[in-house]
Image 1 (cartoon, rainbow, N blue to C red):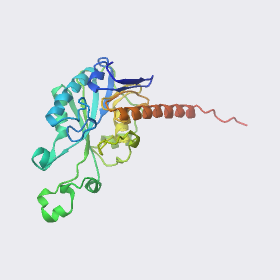
Image 2 (cartoon, rainbow, N blue to C red):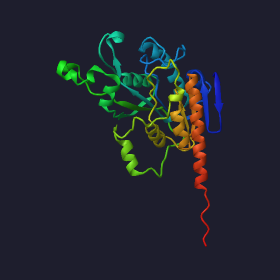
Image 3 (cartoon, rainbow, N blue to C red):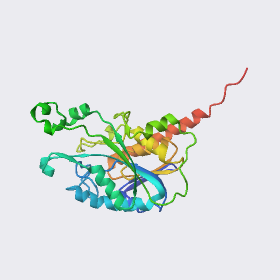
Image 4 (cartoon, rainbow, N blue to C red):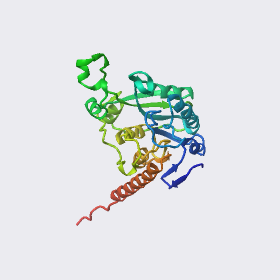
Length: 298
């Protein structure tokens, strides 16, 4: 396995290194599900490393690198199993793109997956409060004064998406759930998730470095939980090639799955290992709590 550093336990394997190089050491058709939030092309730079897919001059460079990852994902995924990626439409700026508007980054990602043979499976819209987005970004299209000054530039808020693709081929083992509640299925089956708390994330402040971008976009834990609960069996391996601080792994371990994660940035990797260990400890405590002896009958 080609990496800078690794931590391997019986529950998880965390690798500090380049995700493409690490995935080359993972056996064929061994991963049951993958869920991650990819770098948002050239919008944010997470590190100065030339191996950082976000450290590119334009979207074309990003996808040139991303294609190497997709080839490895196609190889390591079990046939008939799913990959979910979290993304959003990207703002276009006059300075960088020559115009003010939006870029269809989710569509670009999906088409890249399809070129590698993956099958478009589903798309969920994750609602976000436009007022909160306006206060945070000061985007021209969301400012109320634009209604008075030039309403042609007004737009709606930008939601998140969870897009899922399926690996072609016949499943060797089906994903089955005999205890999946109907009310939970009705919630998950909705094409719009209105109830995701944007603050439902792992604490990441300890992973920040002085020169970090202000933007860190961890997946909400409930989004991860819904994907893993629906699309995996207990004991399956869940993979995140962009592990960050370990959100996907934290939930995977919480739900009784195994986890493989890769992170290039050292400070994020260190925090991810702490979070993964915490998830293991919490589950161990739950097991002991379930084994409490029944009170003696007088």
